[in-house]
Amino acid sequence: MEPHPSFVVLMLLYLSPVAQAVETALEIPKCCEEGSYFVGNKCTLVDEDVDYSYYVYESNATHIESTSRRMSGLAVRYSNFTCQTPLIRVALTDEDIIGIIYNSTALCIRCCDNHIMYLSPDRYCMEYKRTNSNETKTVFLYCYQELPNVAITVGPKLYIIFLFISTVCFFASALIYYLILGADDNKKEPRKVHKKCFLGYALSMGTTFLFLIVLQKVNYICSVIGSLFFVFALSSFVWLTCLCIDLIVLVRNFKKDACGNRLIYLYSFFSTVIPSIILLISTLVNDEPAMPNTFIKGHWEEDVCKFKETSHLIFFVPILVMLFLGFCCVVYTIHLTRKFNKKYENNYDWVRKKQHLRHMLNSNGFLITISFIWILNAMLGKVIALANQIPFDMLESLQGIFTLFIFVLNKHTRKKVIRTCGDRERSASERMEEQELNYIQRNTNGVEGRFD
Image (tube, rainbow, N blue to C red; front, side, top):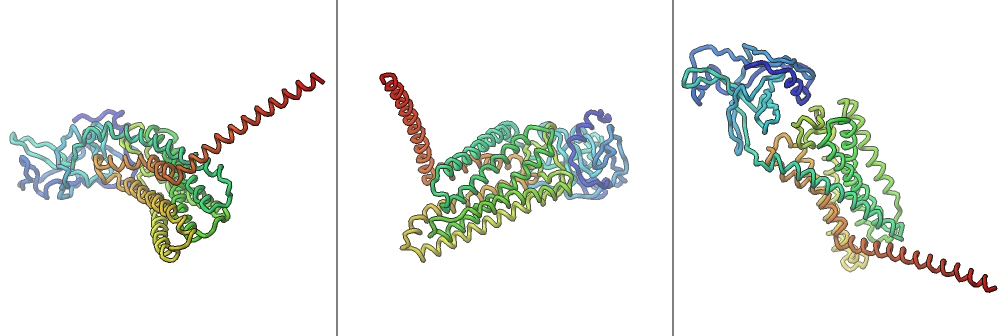
């Protein structure tokens, strides 16, 4: 096997995940037990000392040498390598595995539709194999799942299309709620704060999805785009938690026809300060936002942003905490509504408002559920097989469409939208009539002046 040209290695350096800065001694996972190797397709005990060697790139966490060299006397360990259904164990040759880097990661150029794949030591094993012609060669085993063409071709394209549609739907939802708020005469109406919370959530999610689309397509100013995605994603979950908290406030104060808007300032403060503090901590610790690469669906590609493979707990833990708080608020609201159904079954205010409150409760519960699935998919993105991720990716990319239908096109909000549009059309026609009357009056006055 010839040493690989420098441009291939430079490309590998660009694509290689950043690991810890301390070099790790090579310890190659071995397919057969000690003293055995493959004879045919079975591990067979042999009466000879086996010296394992393969092509290794001198490397560390930040650099890979331009050429590989065959290193003998490699340390090996038996790995008892198996594959879970539906994965199958397949054999690779030195044409597939072009070398090994400092942390025992094998570089495979044919494992994923001609994309370069990095096989960590727990994802492959190496062994010698003696053929029927007594020729000895090196083979690698790894777990493979044949992907349908849709997983590699149609899937990512649909994901981008639905992301774009969802982004438009989020901004459209925010615009419609803004118009409804502007047309509402009662400035202290209790649900006004809740509408403003949804407006903040829709704007934050729309901006989050906008930067998510950009991250799928660019490989420059990655820190800036990653930071913006980081902040707005966290802000979205803060607003979602505020929506659930405010629902408790609405249920407990259902008798009040008016209340102050001071809570919205507190919600706005939290949705701005909490993401900013977390981003600051992440940047100080990692020199860049702790942006999980699993949000970038083609993170193995050459022309997309890549972020450090550090701990992403600083991103996921606050989101999970906020989702848990939102879930607790939804559960407590269910408890309150059941309690009030018995206590105020003949109360006019409760009977009049409980149907709308129940719809708001179901809507918030839906947002909590779909958001949890989105984050869980991102957390397990490197564990779930690519073909199995497609349904989750499609569900993620459809969030904006679901939000538009549930929060805007429901029967309660739809009436307000129609009424708001009708009021605006009426106001426009009234202004036109007033302008026409003024014009006629001015002309009439001019004619009378001439006759005088």
